[in-house]
Length: 586
Image (cartoon, rainbow, N blue to C red; front, side, top):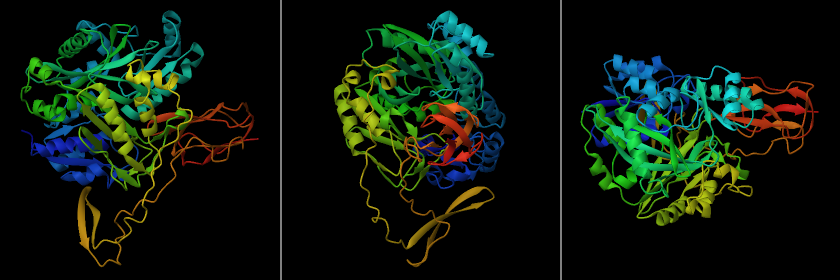
């Protein structure tokens, strides 16, 4: 068995891996950016090492810094989590070349399946039907326009080396191709370090159904469960459930068998997910995620299988602990997972809402689990993913599971940042969801969130004001983090100790200058990636003026009134805060 695992990630997934390793008696090593010095995953790990930098590119995508932490810590294995380097074959090879165990699939499988183009070819070898699309990287807008004109609009431009909806743009007409391609490439480069894209037909009302598989290094591959992930916004999942409900007889088994064949076609081992789109009784291979998925716990709760434990065991050379028949016999009941994101869903806009979490009370009770990378006092940064945590619920059938999930969401308390909880409740309470009549486009095209406002909880700001005798702080020596406890008089503070986070108004959708003021403001902290106008240009109300990146998502900021651009206060690369004026319209 492995002795020490370095988790090349942060947040909720790093916490998840630390807990699984601890149960196996394995030591853990965390890495952290400048902004994550006192993050939850850092506090939990046995050791922690500084990467430097703030953005993902400066820290969690800094190969040399991570390799340095591996050498310094003496870790004999690396778990990549999801996102960042989890689907980067070059990073996997670098780990293996160090003589360190890679807790993931072979680099060759990542190359073939992590690239969404070659994965389609592998799926075809395994006999899975695929959506019409290109089998080469798109070389430019003209090629994409030709595809759309031939196969019909809309089409979808997708990051070839990504997932989770990052770097994915739906294009309605040929006129929109150039900007959509550029935006998809920027997002893909920012989040995955690669900017290649491809194009495929965009189905009109599909469901997103995926299959969790796990393989070992002895040639055994099993599919563990299906999951329905159709409740999405911006092509990113809000709610997932297992097993996928409402499928005709035989379809689930057919999907599972197709997923196993696709994995076997590339010699796959460790955990992975084969994604399909389903419409009108037919399913098509979409892509394969060569890593652990965010939604893996919803499979765990209906099977009792710890997928991270399985990852660690098969990486250490062990055989899968169960056969396909044994896995199938363990599936029971229904599971729902709700992602709690730091976004303001008011009006259905889902605007990123970074900031400090002033209060966090997890839901509890029978059949309820909460996975999070944050505690009260921690801060959601604009530079990273905005996932606060995941509520995972089990019940003996789907109707009870929906009711139990609603109760759990009514119990959760998150203060200091807006969250998606109000939108999640609207989805779960809707008859379309209960009847499994929703699709991947349902949230944005059908669900009415126009009157939605974030749930507010009254906080007790004075509850924690009493000073403590025992105080904790953190020191860093040669890049390694150490936690230190100090005993001091109650009236003495510790300058290095993290201060209690002050309440901050959640970022909203309104303009800080007031509607129609002509002073266009940004609703949240972020980075300007593109200026869409120039001084002297005439604009209409609602026309885009800048593109703001926050939490790895691009958001177009629009003019609040018609007029002429009098002043542009920002340039690409500038960091702005919520309420900052970026453009003045005269």
